[in-house]
Amino acid sequence: MSGSDAGTSMIPALVQTIFREALEQGVAEIHAEPRPGRGVIRFREHGELREHTSLNPLTYSEFVNHMKALCAEQIVPDDPRLPQTGRLSLMIDESAEGPLEISLQTLPVHGGEKLLLRILQADSRDWTLDDLGFSAANLTLYREAIARPTGMIIHAGPTGSGKTTSLYAAVGALDLARKSATSVEWALERIIPDLNQHVVNRDIGGSFADSLRSIMRQSPDIVLVGKLEDTETVDLALGLAAGALVFGSIHTSDGASTLTRFTDMGMESFLVSSAVRLVCAQRLIRMLCDCKEPRPPTEAERLLIRQALGEGEPVDSLFRTVGCKSCNDGYGGLIGVQEIFIQDEEISALVVKGTSPGELRQVARRRGMRTLFQDAMTKVLEGKTTVEEALHRVPSE
Ligand SMILES: [Zn+2]
Image (cartoon, rainbow, N blue to C red; front, side, top):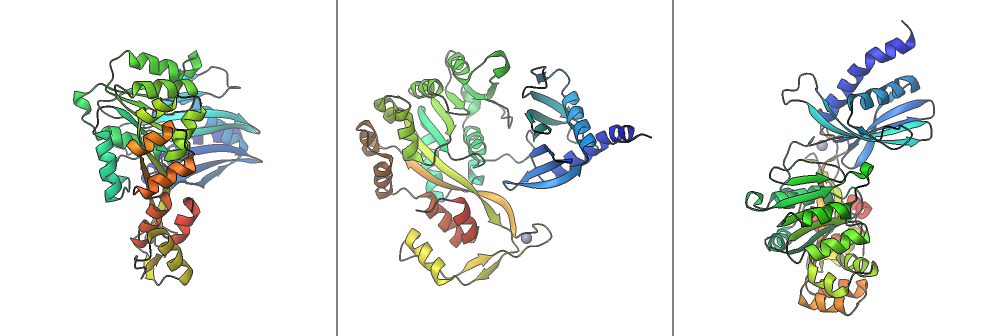
């Protein structure tokens, strides 16, 4: 048997192994990447990539071709020299739950093609607002804001901060059966019953703004705008928020800078001030596994936490990572850290006046906003995570 034949025949078994193990480990994102002299398959777990398999270059390119072939006609554009997008269904042996739905994105890179394979709904758990790690006070603020019929709710943060999961959880919390609810997205990451999910088809020249215009003609009550990136989309979404409840996500660090980002894009400040109701800035941090052990805080940690949360806060005990069979490194799962910026009348008036983000932030803090750092430090005190993890993932003040 030649090497090539051996490689080809083992590919389906390799694919089975990779996806079965991803399912078992709750992994939704798989990266396949060419490296000098080999190809690697990596899993994203708890936010970080971890090597799963190393393949010889021939097997790697056969794996890539096999995955693309599984997409059948559902891969566009035709030309593999361009980045391609596709969808495939994969039956995993011993899986009683039917085939896996997988999205595929290719990117030509030095040495070959990189693949991003995303298992749609890999996380069979339906995330609800209660699962996102909101503090009780923040959850109340959030629920109040989404109970209104109009206005814009924005989730802000870098890639991998859990914005999409939060948006889906928020929309899923609404009574969609009695509303006209539509989303516009680049790719389907989760399927929500009773939500009309529209995927922008870039390959035939579709754009977010064009899609949003069509959705506006469908008499929407609730609209989820995946990404508030370009000026036209932001302009349409702000206008839409006068008559519908609009959800969106953006790569900004916090609420105040989101509002000034919009005015910097050329949006009228009165429109921004009247449309945006709430901005939830967020990050994901790793949660301590149950194998954690209590330890006394150092003097520096005591000081850090008191500076963030106030002198009265007792800092008696923190937790250290231990590591067990189920977690390896002492962490298991992710939890959100949030900062809820509410645009009330006072903030709104300041936005119209063109107040700087720093000043808006100060006013919001005086009016009771708990910062990302404060929320993270509270989670440290509650034993949900460690000081190191919080300092690593959340901007300090
Ligand atoms: Zn553990």
